Length: 362
Ligand code: NAD
Ligand code: ZN
Image 1 (cartoon, protein in one colour):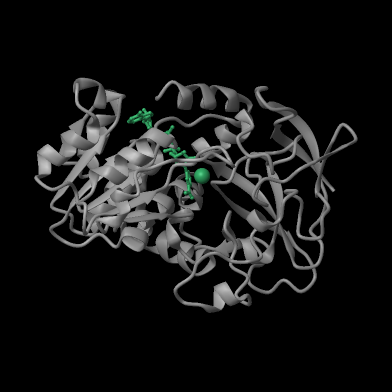
Image 2: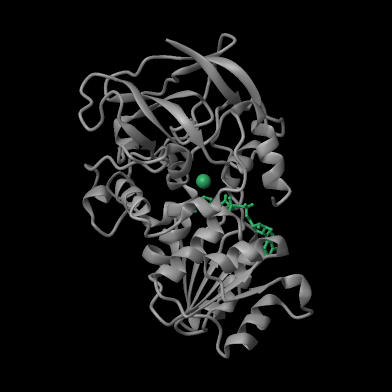
């Protein structure tokens, strides 16, 4: 058993509490990882707000991390002690019918199909003050050590800087893949990206890499525009600067609406606005933002009858165990610069400060 620090969420609506926790050794088929760095994703904040009824408290959140294998359980072959790794919040078991389908990326062994946020054997590897603490998405990267199933961890290049490539655990692939894999943005096309957090800016990067001619970035926080432009946005607009609904503004700007729109905020009204912003016949709208589980959106069905496609994506549509190591190699070959997404670097003791910066749009 390892004793180390972790940021524990004891109850909905409470700040995280940095505690000493015990991390049990990995069981058969599991890997214990020393987490070196982790990003903060808005999804972690949704957890603290209680948006996901399936997430039981107390829980150690965090799902965008990178680390080094500390030990492995019996039968583990794909990683070994000392390997640099990224824990996968969407696993890839390689055996289920979805993993065997080249068109699918959603592994059926995912924790999303497992309600309790415990390990696959329904137990936890974390305790604190005598209490069992739940895992989050199996990865719980807000702990200095974490335990994950072997099929939820990918070995990456030993040269990778862990404090940078941790973003390849969620935010970057989610946004980049939403453009490349889910929307399949074509060269010369026009895109609109609603929301310019870490994920939305990654969508901008993906649209640019796919050869989009025009990328319209939409956010109510204009402080995000400089970075969006640096990453490839050609136009930046705030819905608050217009009297008309933003979908009408985008239609006026483009003639017939954009070819691809992306909602990367997590609000029902911007999800429908993003749908209405794309070409009525050939447009594709991708939902990336998350609403609280059980939310309902109502739309005029005409929006879809006329031909639009409305899709969603988890983690950008990558088969993660195969794809994350390749993305890390592309990062090392400087095919994209996800370092530009890093705004602040803090020690774990200041994790709540990190959340305050996120909520303040910083
Ligand atoms: P973030 O909070 O950093 O960014 C959201 C941005 O939206 C902010 O810049 C904010 O100013 C802007 N915004 C808020 N309201 C707006 C409005 N009405 N109009 C225009 N802009 C508005 O969040 P993030 O970490 O980039 O995550 C974005 C969303 O993606 C979250 O909902 C998160 O849960 C979700 N997410 C989904 C996946 C997935 O697999 N689908 C993965 C990671 C994150
Ligand atoms: Zn995330």
